[in-house]
Length: 174
Image 1 (cartoon, rainbow, N blue to C red):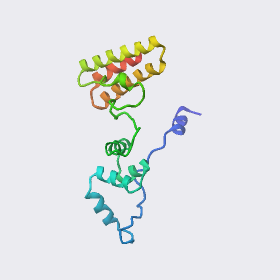
Image 2: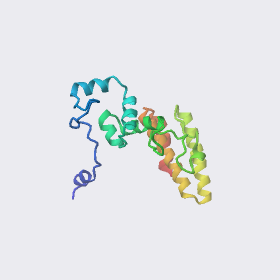
Image 3: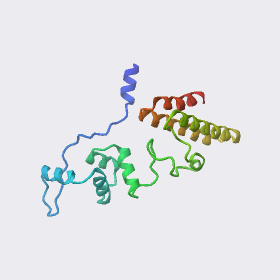
Image 4: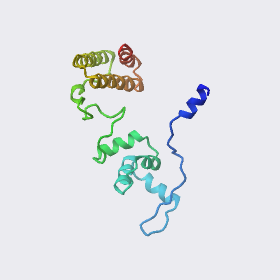
């Protein structure tokens, strides 16, 4: 099997955002027209639509994503802010929230507003990594690496390539 075939076979499933029109029922029991559905959706913000769908019984995040045509991380973030979703973490979730027992060690460590802030963050991450190494705590070291990877990715996607490289260099050394 060629590399291209392996990549194609292992390709993750994609969410289908262009889905068939779903039947929407009006309060009087009749099916709503496409125009009525579009009009009611357009009059509310995406945040309002997400919260409304969740509160009306649509608990499947993928279903909400399809209906409002938003990224899964955005839907999860809105539901978290509304108090409907606990325990969800991804690249854009704040590191100030409790994720596990190591969170308190890494609180307010991640900064990349400029290269100096990124270097200070990496220095703090490195001190924590070394601390966990002395304790023989591989999970703590892993958490340090995850935070550095998060810093790298957030800086990179924010267009801060120099800052991203600082995190990347530390990761490559560990």
